[in-house]
Length: 150
Image (cartoon, rainbow, N blue to C red):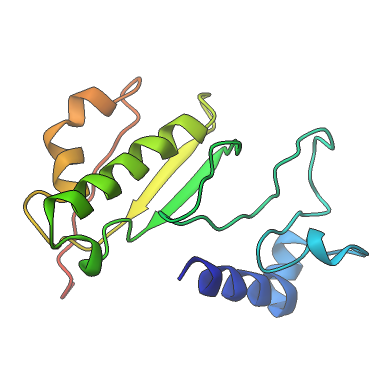
């Protein structure tokens, strides 16, 4: 799923004329395919060339992103239906969520955005809500719940 989303982002950034007009051509004249691939993409607009991390990099619960540092993480469906049927699966997803906090840069500009579907009363999202006070950093956490039919 992460690689599928990465492919979509790559195509969008590469071929969507409106995006390129508004945000620029992030691919530019990249010569190294690794710099603009499916597993990672580095924008030509990278402000600090000393940052080793790619601009866009998909990770999943099955990967080990420990060495990464990010200023924006978009976590889409951390707790999939297939990973919510047993307490062990739910705990693994929650542990991955806490790992994301360790790779997120802790400054005023960093963000962790979570998009989700609820599958169980003991899933990662319910635990986040239940422990909301533990994760609020300088009143920056906001939870917005929208019904699927809406």
